[in-house]
Structure formats: structure tokens, C-alpha cells
Image (cartoon, rainbow, N blue to C red; front, side, top):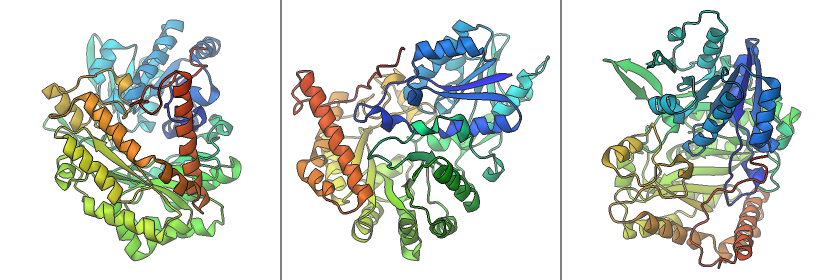
Length: 508
């Protein structure tokens, strides 16, 4: 059987250029590697770096005639693009088998199977589930009920098979199939994740279970207890040796010199962190890397001396989820692993001892109890912690999260079109603020930080990676400014730039 895994054409973020959007999708190279190892004919099509629009994708499907077309998006924002790819495949060949994976479809099974041209859904971690499903499809008389971790329609009924256990030893997976991707087209931005940014991960899952987060849900341990499916947070990692092996491959063969770790929680295991830093230092590679890290664990590693080793090994950008200034809010959101004081202490240490590291924090605003005063307090707190850049995102409940279930049950959502779920557009009000008021306060928060003095200070920073980040931000600001001017909009009065941009090649 010929299998096509496709990430279709899509709109891109308004404040970046096209190249910044082209980071390699780890899910596709991991799925493809397992299929290839088992001798299955698999091809991966990532339309964005190829600038392949729907017309060209359709021509390719007609020419190649795949037996199976698979799509997968954990971001609800792009679920409609995944559906469009499957619709196109069915239009061209009604007998083609369509498979959807990723967090969005895993958590909207009935809606997806009843309303879209999807034959099967792969739930949760997908490598072995997809492999077994493809092998079953190759049989003359397949029995899909024996494949754990899938959902499908049979005799007008929706069947969900028992959940599949997580992969205990991630080292048993083959190396990601980078060779099937247009590697030369990733990481071409001059300043963002430069030079040669590429994604990588050493771990999966998280030890926490935040109510707003879909990432821990996707990699959770799934158990059926008393007839009900239960999720438990779980974190796993590859060995340090395996991770270094992947870095060597990306660095030497594909000339990628900036590793963008996409782990949900990079720094869980202190012993792993230290061994990684020491082995990476021994590689003598001129390498930069970035990661999402927990503030409390940064403090732990700083006290033991491990964090300095990580910085010496090339760590040059960190993103920390600060989320809220008020500790009660953090607890209510299920983020009880640290407090606002811990984030502040962490960021101050980074500023004073490691000025070469770009410090980014994320904040979630527009929660149910949000008021104008609490929002202004968020801005004050963001200034206190001294981040290089604080990103303010409106609460955006996505399917599968506790936040989604509560918002749906209580009727809070005013926007249910997932193509607007971009973490820039408020989709629901708070008790005290409308969506427009939340949007205006996010604009105010951004204006407080992206200022001329902030920009000048960053542009004259002595550290290259950090300086490049500020140059990138300057280009973003200028792009938005001139875009507004050419549209006869006063750039000093526009309060939102959240509409995704349609690439010129999107339909071609």
C-alpha cells in the first residue's frame, strides 16, 4: 500500500514571514520512520515549505494515486485545513482510505467521523497504532477492532477500540525520517532560530495536568476504569545518547545549527539535564538551542550548577509559562507546580547571571474571573519579572481540555469556528469583560513592552542570538507598520493584527 502523510496548505501568522512558519513537524517524521522501518511505502508532503497549494496537491494525488491519506493536527486552528485535504483526496478517489490523527481529532471523535470524510481516527500517541492499522488495511479481511487506539464507523455505528499503552522506551523508535522531508527548506529565517533552525524533542508528555493545556492530554496515559476512560499525566524521555545522535545527524548531515526543542516540559529530569549538557559540550559543535522550561526546575538546576552547564552547551532561548500573576489563578487553572514568586526569582536570576539567554514568558489572559484591574495587574507583574518578551494570549479552550469541557457546558464560548482559535483572538468573554475589551487590553499590554526603548536596548545587546531576536522583532514591527500604511490604516490606532495571512500560493 502507498501511504501519504500530508500537512496541507495553511494561512500563516501575521507577524512573521513565511520562512518563520516553516519549522519541521516532528509528528510526521516520527510516524514515517516507523512505517518505513516496516517496509511500508510512505511519502510525506509538507505543503508550506514546498509552497504547494491545493491545486498542485490535487494534481500530485491524481498522479501518485495513494491508497491511504493521513493528516494530523494537534492545533484546532488548522483542523479545517486537514479536513480539506481529506475532502480533496476523497473527491479525487472515493475509495482512498482517510486517516486523521492528532489532539483535535482524538478529542472530537463523534463530530469528526459523522461530519467529515474520515474513515479512521488514530487516538493519542500514533506510531504503532498507525502501523498496525495500515497492516490491517493490507489484509483481505481486516478486523479493525483488534487495533488498539483507533475509532471508526461500522454499520452506522461509531466504534472506539481500547486505548493503546504509551511507548515506554522511546529509544526503541527509529530515528525520525528526516530524509523524506525538504530539509533545505526549513529554518531559512535570517534572525529567528538562526542559523538553520530545526525542531527536535527528547521527551513526551508532562508531569502536570493544567486545565488549559492539550499537550499533556495528547501524551497522557489512557486507562479504562469502570467503563470510563481516564487520563493520567506522564512524562517519558529518550536517552541522552539517542538525543545526541539525532543532534549529530541534524548538525552534520543537514547543516542545522539551532535546535528548537518542542518538548512540553524539557527540564523535568535533573540527571538527564546534566548528562546532556556534558555530552553536548564534548561534541564541540557550534550549536544554539531553545526549550520550554519550568521555572521551579530552572531554580533547582541553578542551585546544583547544572543550569550553567546547559547555557555553556548552547542554551540561548528559554520560554517559561508564567501564565498568571495571582497564585490562586494558577491553582484554579491546574498549574500548581510553582507560584508567581518562583517565576520572578527564576527570571531575575536569568537576567543577572545569564544575560546572553533570551527570556520569554507566556501569560494567559481573559480567564473567567478576569477584570480590568486583574489584567492591569498581569501587565505590572510582567514588568516586575524582567522578561525580554512577555507573550499575552487570550484563554482559548480547545477540545480535550478541562477548560473546553467547562466552557462548552456553561455556554461561555462566543466563537466556535476553530479557524479563529489562534491564541490571539479572544473566543469568549470573562465575567467582567467582553471579548473586545479583552482584545483591547491585550493590545495595551503589547504596547507597554514593544517600545522604542525596549527595541534600542535589544538591538545593541552584545550577544548575537539575543540581538537577532530583537532584529527579528524590529522587522515584525516595520512589516506591520508598512502593511497598515499601504492599507490606509493608521498604524498607531489599529488594535489587532490577528487575521492569519493567506499565502499567494495557497490555491495554486
